[in-house]
Length: 258
Image (cartoon, rainbow, N blue to C red; front, side):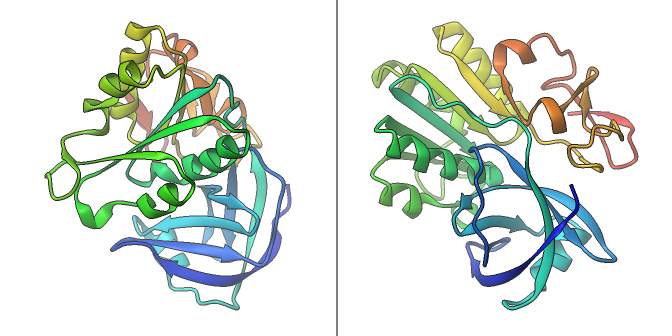
């Protein structure tokens, strides 16, 4: 679990806030697993794996750590630990991926693996506005069917990703759903899947200080450590956890309402 140093090969600006970091590295990983990225003297944060070969992550500037990371240039080195955690299991034949905001990161990796296994893949990408949309062209290049929603209607269908989820599940005879994004969105999606009796797997985001070591408790949800037992969970299991879709812990460890 010690960090391994890796060189940044290329940085791509994906949209107004997000950059993709491509490293001179390849790893073996399961879609949905994550890495702990380490910047000496600054700290360590979890990032989903977008691609294992070459190793790729996306970084949205949302705080001091990500701001420092985005200032790095190709040729610089940083450290990583991983892959860590429980990922997605690719099952069934007609699958739907629902990504909200930065949650598309692990779903792109999942889509690649699903296409390789000859699954029929449908993708819903949701964003607040057109300028924040991620990976639409990349998903389409995989040959999957892509649906886009924006909250303000600036691109695609106006509304939330979940607004068309039920419609697509019925129309395309979806038999498995996977999602990553805002927890409220995933809570709604889980209820839709439960109603339609379709299995649903969700990837949770939590503060992870120890990154898979299971000692800080920062990521716990009703006693379940997301860093170890997740980040991917079956929705049926999450229904047993009262904090899912309702509360999380902030950086100080204080429980706050969603």
